[in-house]
Image (cartoon, rainbow, N blue to C red):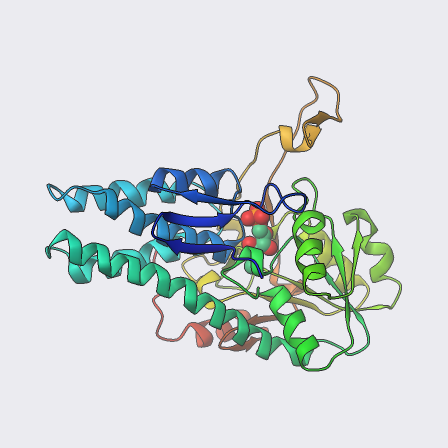
Length: 349
Ligand code: MRU
């Protein structure tokens, strides 16, 4: 098995997702700036994995800090990591958790601060795996036996500390004895589906078929797809879901063809401070991701390009949201608030 991200004596070790599936290489980030660069440049990606990376980045940052002004060092590290990618709220959730841990030991000797922050970052990683397994347990009963599950982007072990959210539901359904296979959308322009989901599922010997994004309607109309399961980068209080660009189109096509559309995500992906998905910041990525494929130009010089990394699926297309605390159904304003309970997820970010 591979490790998406782990803490080591040398630094934060991540599998380089830009190189998969051709090469399985690990990079070691030895300071917080390298962690920030790794998030920005997609060495690591996927909302929960970005959260774990940010937490470990904070711990690494405080290992470098000098004792003269730990508060200033902490703020600088958090500011740098917060500026990497804007959409996945798990990043900001993890930074807030690290801040709470820091506040518990603030004023103590630097060695105690460092110990506490490393411990918290490693705990966030361990909890994420358990959370994904719980998402799987709640989601598995929803997956129809003997059918195809369609997924988009990569919401698997590579997008989390392990097991995955959407792919966690698939893994749990298979573990429960369901005979299912997966259709993975390739996910232009960054090809997370082709490069990462297909690789990860084949690694686990899960029957997988790769399709291009524009084939999804054809297969959703065929009657062979039992459900769509995707992950999420941020879910607003009303159940609108930001996820990888192309998710919205899939949701509309699923609705048109009466195929259930499920979103699998941890409670840390909820952002109850936002009333609707309209307020979710959408990352714009470089034009080269669209004009080039693996360094080869496929579009004419000078063409205008748009490259939003995410879109927002309105809640009316979402059949259910599968979390580690249970399955939320419409109306989401009530069901999500119920699941978030005592968590302070309504804070502004
Ligand atoms: O740009 P990426 O690869 O970070 O986008 C990832 C996604 O959109 C995933 O579906 C989402 O983060 C959920 S991962 C469990």
